[in-house]
Structures are given as C-alpha cells and as structure tokens.
Image 1: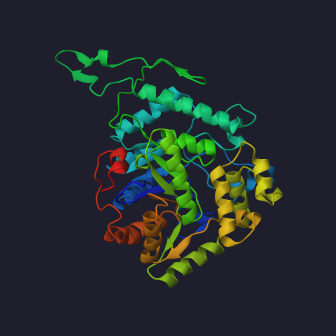
Image 2: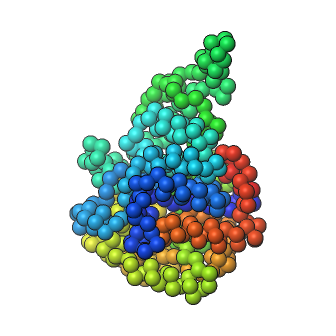
Length: 436
C-alpha cells in the first residue's frame, strides 16, 4: 500500500548547462554565462525551496561517455549532460542559501571507499542540519572505470555486491558517535565524551574500515538513501536500503507494475511500502494556455540535435546506437554497461507509441505539454492510481522549467490538497515521512 497524504517533488540536476532534454542549453532562456558562478546554484536552491520541493539531487558521472561512434566528440561537443563541476562543491552553496530543501549527491560505491564517502556525506549533512540524500550508484560506463585504473566496469552483480558492502560499512561509521557525544564544556575541559565514541571495526567481503569516523553524528543520523537500480538485482538493493526510489517508467501502467513489484520486494526484506517514496521521472512543458504550451514544446523540438540524442542515449543504454537496431541486440552488446531503467523505458516507449525500439532510442525524451491544470491532472492521476508517490522532475530548459512548475503547477497541486504548502519537518527524512 502506497504511503498516504501528499506527493513528493524532487529536482533532477546536473552541474552543467543541460540535465535531461538534449540540446536544452540552446534555448535562448537558458543562461550560459553563470555556470561557474556560485549565484547560479544559490538561486536554484532558493527557487526549489520556494516551490516546496523535497529535494534537488545532482546526477553525476565520473567521465565523459565515449560509446557513440567510439568517441566523446558528439557527446561533449554538442552539449551532452556533462558534470562540469563536482556536485560536492556546489551542494554546500545550496545548503547555505536554504533551510529546508533536501540536497542530493550521486556518489559511486564502485570507485569510492567507505570512509571517504561517510566523511564527505556526514560533513554535508552536519552543515545542512540534516538535509542530505545519497544517490547510491555503481557507475554505468567503461569510461568511468578507465579513469580509476580499470579497463572496464566489473560485472553488474559484483558491483551491487560491493555497493551493499560499502553501504553497510558507511552505516557502521555513521553509528560510531552517539547523539550526545559532543560536550564542548570549557569549564571542565571535556570536549567530547569519549565513552560515547566507538570503533566501527567493519569488515566485509569487499571493504573494511576501522573507524571511528571523525565526523560527529548528524541530525539525521545518516543521509537519506536514494537508489535508481531497475534490474532485478538493483531493485533488491533498493528494497533493502532505499528511502527514495527513482525510476524511469514510460506509462502509468508501467508505474503501477513497478510499484507492485517493489512492494513484493520490500516485504521480502521486512519493510513496508510506506517505507519508501517511489518517484518516476516526469518531464513537462507548462504554458498559461494549451496553445502556449504546445508552441513552447514545438520550439524545443526545433533546437534538438539528433546526433546529441544518439550520443546521449548511447551513454544511457551502454551501447553505440549507430550500430544497434533492436532491443535484444542492444542488451547483448551492453553487457555490464548502461542503465537497465533506460533500456526498460525505451521498450515501454516503443510499445506505447507503436514504434520500433530503434526509433524510440533515436528520440529525445518526451514531454507533456499543457496548462497547469492539464499537467496537474496527469500528476494527480498517477499519484492516486498508485503509480508513484511523487515525481523526479528534470528541466527541459534550465531554470525556466522550475520557475514554471513553481509559479503555475505547484499552486494547482496545493489547491487540490495533494502537495504541501509548508515544510512539516526540519530534516529531509522528516519531510519524506511527513509531506505536510
């Protein structure tokens, strides 16, 4: 059974000029001169908080995809979804500019060690007063592996085995300090109560760490865990660990099926459906009238670079789409690379549109264009049908998408009583459990 109450909204972000919609950076309303300015990210944080978003999280990769035509030229040359800054540098700026907005970082368990992860995320959770989410990824393309001294990614199941080991180690490190271990008593000279700090002494099949962590316990105890694995193994990891699950289903029916599958998996780990928020991606173009929305959407189509779409989707799918024609062929070629969720979405999109997989893979991600009422109708329908607990919203045009959502769609959702008017809690976890 889905958690009751109001829906959640999470922003999908990149530290570059575009985050999801291919060629979105070419829109005349998309600023390009402030990518390295702190004000860009501070203003974004204020914008999302004013719209009462639960969280903004940065999708991130540790390299530039070079699958398409065996080169990175089309991907980076045409403006793909590159991370031009380390999100862990940007997120403290956003924390400083806000008081309630959740702050999500994507960090790979394949390449980072538990102590480093626990220390960085714990530090950010402390200075944000408990607003951090960790999007746990195992990485998805070989270009990342080669930046860390490997020829290729390890097998997917092996990556997930290590991910669970790293998660357990991080949790052991975050539990090294009791809540009241920090004393700071000048008169007595007691800085901390050392009896309330302990070693982690964690040793698993892939990692080990002694501890104790040098970072005191945070207001949340540990960051909220966000996970987006869509393969059977990835879904099991999400069912065991996640508090937010990001998925990329193409239709409401696919969303219902995903939620039902996750509910079965959650029960197998002794958890309930109310323990997680399942959030499919949702792309929208909003207009004051339907004709304005359609005109905006039609303009977006004119700036799409087809070669960038191919390069971007090649990276997501883990194959060179210049050489692929069928889903089975793409699956066989991908091996351990790419995103299962993206492959599932391509199949679902092809089925829904009555097209081939090759045609679906060559299209930019679809957007729903309409008035605030039309957009809210679809969101409410999915939410009340049990297809989701809310949505992850990528920008078609940055930051205009979030301005339009905040100015037009959020008030309509609030009027219908399905989205918060104020934050109910102090920490991200509190706001996930009580959406207002």
